[in-house]
Image (cartoon, rainbow over all chains, first blue to last red; front, side):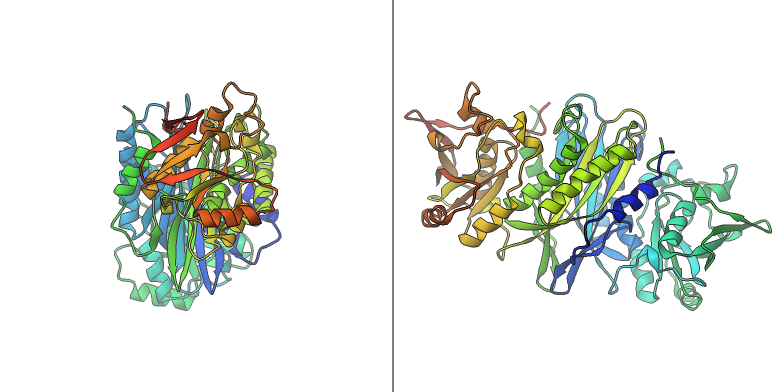
Amino acid sequence: MNPTEDEIIRFFAGRAEPSSASVMIGIGDDMAQVRLGRGSSVLITTDMLLAGVHFDISRATLDQIGYKAVCVSLSDCAAMAVRPMAVVAAVAIPVSFGDVELKQLHGGLTRATAAFGCSLVGGDITRWKRSGSLVLCTTALGRPVVGKPVMRSGARPGDRICVTGALGGSRRSRHLEFTPRVAEAVNIACKVPVHAMIDISDGLSTDLTRLCRHSGVGAVVEAEAIPVSADASDTRDPISAALNDGEDFELLFTLSSRSCAKLLARWTEPTPITEIGRITDTGKIRLRRSGGVYDLPAGGYDHMSR
Amino acid sequence: MNPTEDEIIRFFAGRAEPSSASVMIGIGDDMAQVRLGRGSSVLITTDMLLAGVHFDISRATLDQIGYKAVCVSLSDCAAMAVRPMAVVAAVAIPVSFGDVELKQLHGGLTRATAAFGCSLVGGDITRWKRSGSLVLCTTALGRPVVGKPVMRSGARPGDRICVTGALGGSRRSRHLEFTPRVAEAVNIACKVPVHAMIDISDGLSTDLTRLCRHSGVGAVVEAEAIPVSADASDTRDPISAALNDGEDFELLFTLSSRSCAKLLARWTEPTPITEIGRITDTGKIRLRRSGGVYDLPAGGYDHMSR
């Protein structure tokens, strides 16, 4: 059987070079953290977006594609409560592209960096020789807001599980113009200690499975509590859409029940925060729905699937 | 007429957002430099390599392709006398690739990071849906070795122009297994003040033109002095090959005549350093050959060409 994306990443993480003192967080989380000496460090994330996979070039404008590419990396910053500082973008363009198309793409890239308080500082442009579709690779640098970045691996049994926003049906429209939860992540991490966090890029069920596996814990999610997006509410099974659709780019995080109560009581921002379940010590990811409790498989998007 | 790569980059550099205090070096040099506070900064470069453009997947092994991808970014570090610290790599793989191919690619990436004293700290893997060729995007982080990174823009009239290694014919074999001049750059910058430096990625004539344009100077190159690679010496016009072939990945740098004499006298490393000409105040790039002096057009590789 073909390995999943997560299996491949685990394999590579396991083969990482003898850990250098400069690598504070290596392969496997939303960002890597590199020590620069004198108590300073930087975090980095890279994402590649492909025409026909992450965007449909016949439906999205080039401005939207550029905006999305940057925001995917900024969402990785949000996932660790890291403040983005700078972005570089590399693009491979089809033979047919001229400077008009490049300027549209560039407009989308800088629309995103400007909106989230960082700068486009460099990049690379290459043209395919014959056939070849648009490819963008964005890399973001950031700094942790509160001492340490929030990792995937800190969830503890008894923690409450929360999400920002509403989930499901992103592909209908939101996935091109979503708001990476950079401000929300910083705000949450400044208010209460967050034990573990991840952005929901490949579906709640898949990203919760990742968070739990990194933390060595299980979870029970309350189906009735999941905030379902308006884009998913009229589908055949809105809860399944909210659990398994990709590209929500909302935050999924865990914190003590006391912190959770404090956060919800003090949260006055427009982006909602919803408690959807609890971390357990069983190692299993479960869903309580219609009175029963069922295994919740990682049913989201796998970038290695054919 | 279609704009060249350099024209497009100048356009983007000119439209950079109101310069943030955190951007120390922005678009246009080999790396960007970002301030992190407390006297600390980091440099970053990103490069995208495409099947059919930067490598021939039927001739190169996946290990060689992974190695080359990292080394292209490490050569950008060398170009500014920056010590590479960490690399992230994003890849788009064809539908046909399985974990065997991914492990070969990964082997090449880590062969390069290990050889040059840095770590692969993260990445991204995505599969094309239907057709789509192998794409790699590598991003390197580094720190300056001697106070400030060496930029393209510091060349002064009267400076001597030097290159490392030998030039031309890289496509015959060297371009897959080249040695980014990281150690040489650090060594040179520790011995003498280097006024300007760039790596020769797109051909001596093109990269010298870039260095001179950034510095607001001209140059005269002595054709007889150019070190021609064995790969180019049996071609129809070895000097033209050395001037215009891409992917040498050698260093091109300028320094005072006094520093140049000192460097050449003290240089005992295996990689040769050759003085090939002088920086002038004319703004023109010229070539002295067979007794005459001629304009030297940027005849190297343009990534925007069709």
